[in-house]
Image 1 (tube, rainbow, N blue to C red):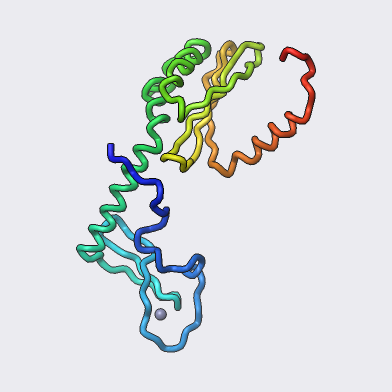
Image 2: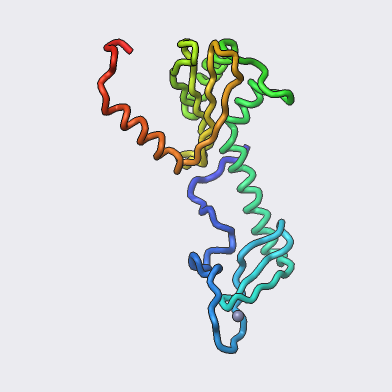
Length: 194
Ligand SMILES: [Zn+2]
């Protein structure tokens, strides 16, 4: 798998010259020669362009532009493979075309063991299920180096016979949970040992 650097911008390869928000604004300009700037591409063969006056057009990409788009596409594929590899491995181990391969205690113990393979990508938190049995909240990071795309979360309950619940957080979703934990942290424990 190709290693990708963490510095490349998230922008379209040709978008560097377009100030933010400008593409959305339509300006009345006097009679002028259009100043075409690339705003999107279709595959690696067609470019969509826009003038600041709002006029739009599409044209075939040149060979050099196609090469640049292809390089960008390859980069994104490599990045994607790196970003999702922990969660792809999770799916490979615990799901098949019919859904979950295991559940409850069996799944929980298998996931705990599997998580040891991914110390930098997987966080397992202890919780309880509705039968007061130990259960796990599992967080699987989708990351490239120190850049986080998002986190897939699984609630794996031990004894209530339910399949795991699966949900997803973008980095921006963290604030809500962090707030909740912060509020909880402001309390004393009801029982000393819990
Ligand atoms: Zn124009």
